[in-house]
Image 1: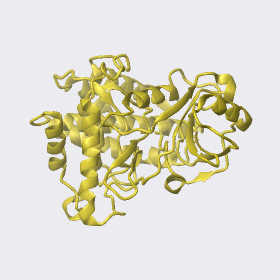
Image 2 (image 1 turned 90 degrees about the horizontal axis):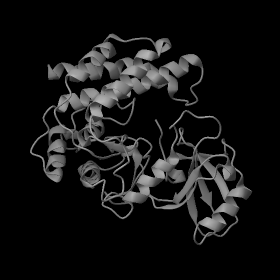
Image 3 (image 1 turned 90 degrees about the vertical axis):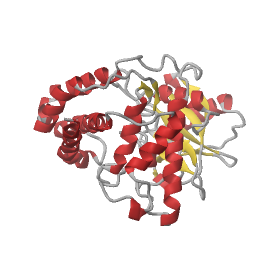
Image 4 (image 1 turned 60 degrees about the vertical axis):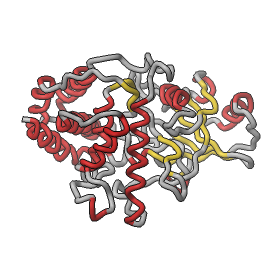
Length: 355
């Protein structure tokens, strides 16, 4: 799961360039394609951005962020940075804040893979879903801002935004369940879990009768946003790698999983009581989203949670397979593989609440 795009060094840290980049070729390309660019150019690589290498580009006058495909042979459709750039361009200027894309390079001969350059957004990233870096009385406003942004995203007309072809229309859950079930079943080395087997069997039978479609982010979490340095305001939503046209309630439920997600897996509250933390309850958070999107309630809420816990468990199952094959490059891969049984159990618990 990718993380980090237009972050400041204070938020993610940087280090020497691990995936080589031709600074001379990049300088020439930017001089031709980025308005106002003046060298000399220095390059550092962010510690985040595991899936797609991400760099901080600095000149005496400006700073930029470059996001590229990894070089070499890749799976078809994987690491599609130009897809990220496209959705960011479509949303720029809307109620969904994104980093402005300044230039796109489809010519792989420049750096060895496609890339795009965007503005550097300065601000704060919160890695803890409880926002414990803030005073208790300020935290609810940050939750409300996240709620506003995801509701705004799901309210954008994909046709009006020029994204009508950004994903396949209809049958979102059937296609997603089929995809992740197949991946889980075919990875024999990673093994099988009884909870996952139950979900593979049950999920296709429980899909709600709803064919809504919206632009979905796919990984909407507090640590994929840059907040204003002092205000409860999102300046940029990051990491659009999993974005597509999909069901908005799936996207919102993935985000709201933070209420039940153990914090050591991804950003989550781990079923802690949110009230003493100064946060809205899960019910209040759902109600705020409903009010913003014109809903009265969300029937089948536990199905959406079960699906999302299953989807994330299937992703972690794939990571476990790569760990066992010795092909996992992410330093946290082993931790995620070990978290798989807990995710599968959370998915099953949500399934059982539906029955």
